[in-house]
Image 1: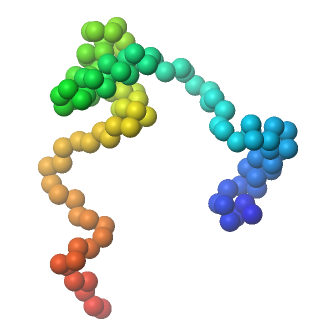
Image 2: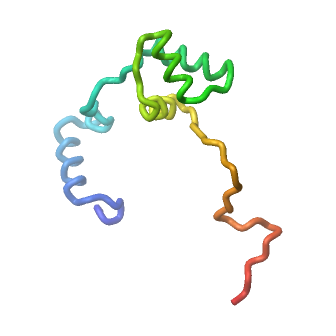
Image 3: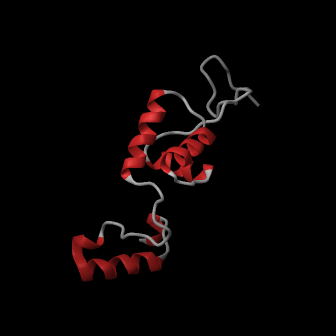
Length: 111
């Protein structure tokens, strides 16, 4: 069963143990360790308003959070938070990247 689901057998044993102990309450993930979020819901609302009002760079958003809210974040932390909020952070490309799937106009070579 573990190979079929591509997990370790220990993972299956742990899940079964939790299921027998707590039933359906064992299914949702529990809170993880780590530092608490530096942004409150109010800060997330402000970020969303700023982003939807005009396109801004990550550096500008970090600086604006610090000046208006007194919160210091790294650019990477802000990018991760924006991903959690459902935003996609893209950088400008200076060249086109080739597609992994061939287009209909491109015929595959016969070897």
